Length: 91
Image 1 (cartoon, rainbow, N blue to C red):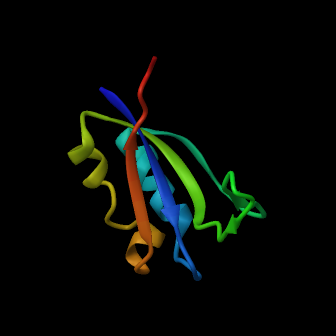
Image 2 (cartoon, rainbow, N blue to C red):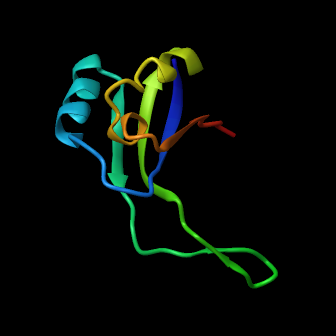
């Protein structure tokens, strides 16, 4: 099994998180997550960029395809927002 981070990028309202999280819990792959807010995105030159990551979830699945299979029903994904799926690399 591998662990993946699901990063949600949304610019508007989304749908039913409770049902989606319950679906993930039922699969046994959900390892936690949270909504995010009130932050800044900076670079070394002092510029500030718009923050686009609005939440995250940790998932334990076989591979990237297993993580991708969990996208249907994700409120950000379903509303046209972007979701990044990234494998967590252990040192």
